[in-house]
Length: 258
Image 1 (cartoon, rainbow, N blue to C red):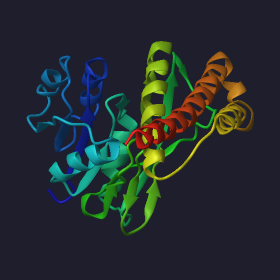
Image 2: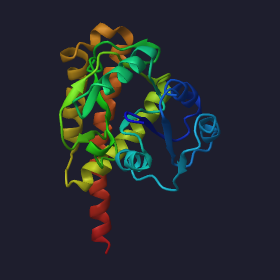
Image 3: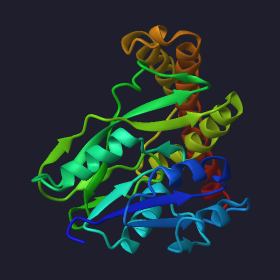
Image 4: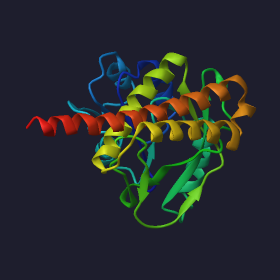
């Protein structure tokens, strides 16, 4: 097809999200799944929508894993979404319309996120524009372990109006699990980049993350969940710097014992 669309999704134990996600993008020409060894029924659910499923036995990080999915795509356009995201009808129609007349290489999508039962409208989460739609030959994902981005290699980037829905966190348990997992990955990434940290940096950056989220980005307008979100951002930042600090301590100890 002239303007065919490939949807790419990476998964791991996403059974509680994936069915709604896939149903929202069943209108696309192909669905590519790259799963890194789910132990729930994620893969079985995916097989109801596509047979283009790759299962990997390692986890290289979000950026490299998404590039693996991108390498499987054959459509002229690629729509990258996460298992906890949905493409509502208004966005589906806007995408169909825009790719038939686009001169742009890629498009930013506004993302509307839900946090512990509340749609967040401030806190740095709105507006939250993410590049998710792009011509397959004109973009790649960065190699970041977490917080990967689409790097547009050439051409202009446009902006769509209809939001992508993001069911980020259903419970505090999910928040705490992700704070721990992401702070570890961030610390590892920063260590590999030669960055250093200290207890003072952890405290200062953690406090600043709270101030930025709750005050400067008007998190207080998101009510109770806005405060909880600001605290969790602060915790994630604080622990990221602490873990980076201890990564240096650990490696220094290992060097001294050689």
